[in-house]
Length: 64
Image 1 (cartoon, rainbow, N blue to C red):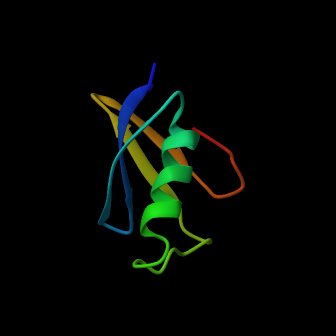
Image 2: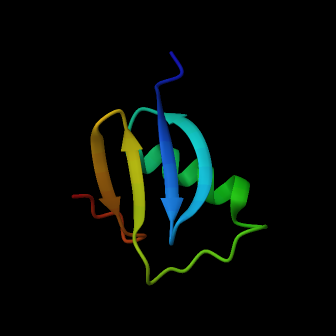
């Protein structure tokens, strides 16, 4: 099973829809895919959504 699709954003930039079993897995895929093209700011949070659920994730792996 490929997991769920999550929408990943940072600073208003759309980093794609990525599948994963958790928001952190989707974030890892987004960073791998878009890290070359988008200047990822490690001090800023990522906003990850799935349906009406919103996750705020920082690069330290903490999730709200």
